Image 1: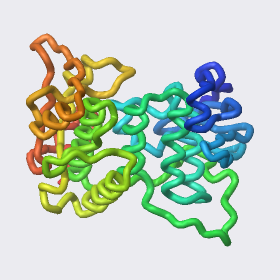
Image 2 (image 1 turned 180 degrees about the vertical axis):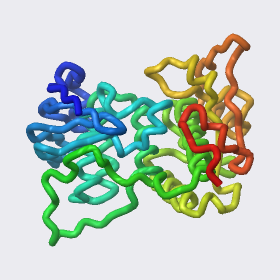
Image 3 (image 1 turned 30 degrees about the vertical axis):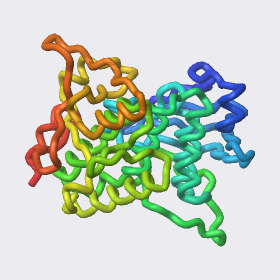
Length: 311
C-alpha cells in the first residue's frame, strides 16, 4: 500500500465567524496519512481530531481511526463528489468514527455530519445532499449501550463499514440510484429546500417528515421497492452525456421548468427561479423522469459498473 503523509491544513481552510458560531467548529485540522487500499483510498489519523458542535459538545475521532468515506456508497461519488474533497473530509472523519463506534445517538450523529460540513462553508444544498445520502444508504438505526466502552479506534483499515446497498440485488440497486439522483436534482433545483415531491406534495429535508420519508425509503429498498408507486416520489436516470458535460466539482443537473408540474407550482409559490439548465450540443439537457419499473440494469451500468447480467 502506498502511504502519503498529510496535514489537512493544505486542503482545508478553517472557516470562522458566523459559520463557526452557528454550526460549531473544528478547533484543529485533521493530521494523518492517505493510504491506498485494495479498492479505494482511506485516511488514517495519527492524532485525535475534534469537532465542537453548536451546543459546545465535543466529538472526538481518536488517533489511529481510518475513514474510507463509506458513509456514502462509492457509486454516488460520481455525481455528488466524494467525502475526501476539500471541506467534506473533516465532517466525514467525525461521522465515520461515530457511525462505527455507535458511541452517540443515531440522529445526533447524522446531524453532526451536516453541521460539520456547514461549519466549514459547505452550502446548505450540498450539505443536504450528503445528509440524504448517509440517511438513505448509511447504517441502520442504532441505540447507545452505556455499558459498552466505545472502541478506540473503531476502524483501523480499509475494510470500511457495511452499506445498505451491499445486501440488495442489481435491479434494486439501480432503482435506489435513480431515486437518489432524483432527490439530488430536486435539492439542486430548489436551493436545498425540497427533498422530493410525493403525491404532488413537497417534502423538506432535515425535518421530521423528511426523516420519516428517508426511513420509509430504506424500508422500501429492503423490500426491493415492492411498495405502492405513489409513495416513492420522483426517479431519474443519470446519463453518460450528462456526466461528461457537467462541472466535475458539481452535482448532476437540476430539473427544468415543465418537467414536474408539482415542482413548477412549488417554485412559483416560493418565488424561486429554476437554475440554468445544463448545456449540451443538442441543446438544454432535460433529465429523464422515470418510474421505478421503467428502469433497466444497463441504465446505470456504464457509469456505475453494475453487473448487467445478474438475475
